[in-house]
Structure formats: C-alpha cells, structure tokens
Image (cartoon, rainbow, N blue to C red; front, top):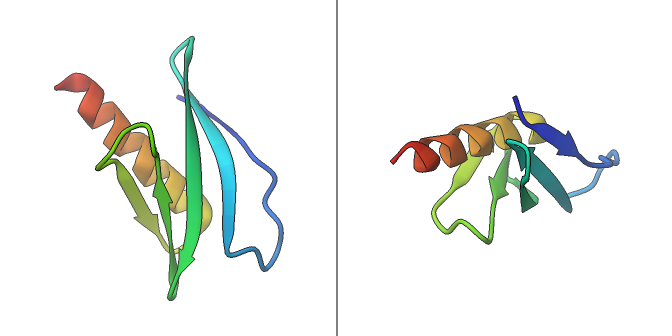
Length: 72
C-alpha cells in the first residue's frame, strides 16, 4: 500500500500532500474541502480524482484511481 505524507490541520479547507506508490513513484496531491466532503486531485495525472466524506477517504479514492490508471 502507498504512503501518505501530510500534516492535516483542523479547519483547513485546502492543503498539499504527497502520495507515494511503489518504490519510486511520488505524486503531489491537492486536497480540497467541497461542501460536505473532500476532493483529492493529482495535477500530474489529469482525470485522477478521489472523493470522500473525509480528506483521508478522498486520498484513498485517489490512490485507487491512480492504481486503476496504472493497470491500463
């Protein structure tokens, strides 16, 4: 499973983090508060998006989207 490097602060609406998948694959990620939930996007992989009720769920969804892209 990939590693998430981040510092999450209470009340933050947008933050940057990195997601490491595999040995040398690191992606910069933007996580944004959107209404009642969160959206995680990876600028280096257009179309890869994760959504969730928490920031961590959104990042998990993004991880799944990236893995799905890697398989194709």
